[in-house]
Length: 354
Image (cartoon, rainbow, N blue to C red):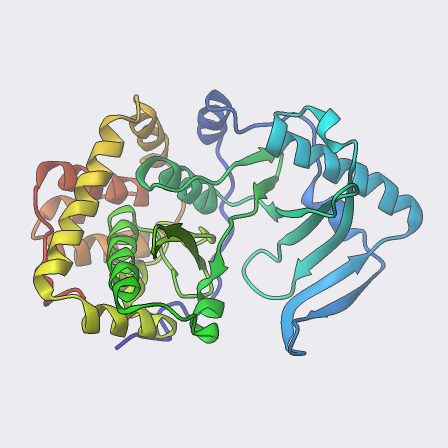
């Protein structure tokens, strides 16, 4: 069964160090001039956003004075051009900012921006958030170790991220989409692989509100991919269960789906497959993983207590004493990946996990 109290309080925001900024600059993640999170705080009022059934979405549309609106919307369009076209503002000729929403809960109170094409009414979203080193490391590790990509850039103390396409997992579960028995097997397989990726890279807090399910039609069946959308708890918490999506009560339907549709030997097979894929991604990262680890191993993104507690648990879990001597969360992530490269099989049996 999952544990609904894995994370009991908000984490502190950790600054981006000069060494991390240097790494980000090397890989084109820094932009000299753009929108700032604090710019969007200059709204005069806000209106709650409700879904089609009248439920509070926990987002509010913020409204600006006319002078502020013109300036802020121009900056937002420029930020969108950076995300989508490396700063080529000609793409914004027929675009306008339709709405700016602020999330009323969560760790960083992000803003969601809706961009609309005036010619065909097509729309897109992107996000403006407070900067946090944990989140940056999560985005970079996801870029290197997973099949997913999230385009983003930072400007001073602000991070701007593109929208991740997919059905929010909690909505996916509520809507109970009609899928076949074969589709359930595929979805269960993807949850096993997602569970494994999170644990290996130490991405935490992956309950159903923090990832999306992407569906792709494949002949007569559906192909599923699970994609993280929240990286605030990357390598921060002390409990190893925080890094295993199977333990969150919100993910219980995914866990039951796995138990009902996959034999233990299948679970072990998919764990091995995912670990092999991660290892291959590290090998072909052309030094990017090593460059990231060089910075992350020296950075402070958690407390000493969390580091030592997690290191002790992982030393017991993997039967590897190297984790106990780790002095940073980056060191723990590094040893987790090195262990994956060294070992050809998962450290635990399918009866222990999933």
